[in-house]
Length: 319
Image (cartoon, rainbow, N blue to C red; front, side, top):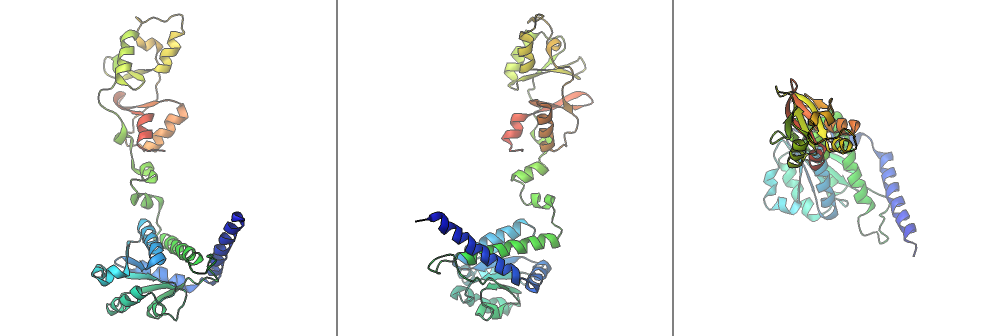
């Protein structure tokens, strides 16, 4: 059996369903966007079975892109959750047939409180279609399922139409990348836009030595500091240099090497440092990568406030 050919046929069938829907889209989308954008409350999405699973995903997408939304199962709504729908809310109901028993039973209750309803179904003349203030067709020429039983092309279209609505609403609300990050503070995008150097820099038990400290003692401090570096300051606490493990290896190859010489002689005299502890950690990571170093020193008026190590950035998920 040629499974590759079967898979291609499924994708082709679902692509044709999307293309057909694309051709018929018109003022219905405009009406739906205007209705949702005008809500003072939330958009409640509801549906049964596969439609319910798709609806749950749609509600999550709306909520993460600036449209307050959550999913309610019709059966739960009949047993008390209808109270979660307020007079300032709107409902988006999904049923391919438009006749799903559990869904149809809650429609009169929704309309009794004059709550606006967006219906997604294959048939406008269905019960759901008749109750709807705005109707969005999710009709497909055929399902990808060879038995024409399992929702496949229709669920793909429904989800894609939900994505289209979410994007339209993002455009209408001028929803920006910063807004998106605000809804995803724990994600990689949120970390890039919100985590600052001050949030990650180390400020305690830093491996700091004076300018006169011999290399022998500097090696001990480096080992105890576990940063692979030693910070060297003058008598007033100003940063004068950084001795890295790379500097130490290069020192070992020098004919002038001596454990009794001051560590500053083998250190980098112009270490990379920043004074903006409010700098985004992602920007600091780019500096570390640009200069091919392990650590940035954070200073204020030349004095050490902390250090930002590449390992801390990686562990925090900064990319």
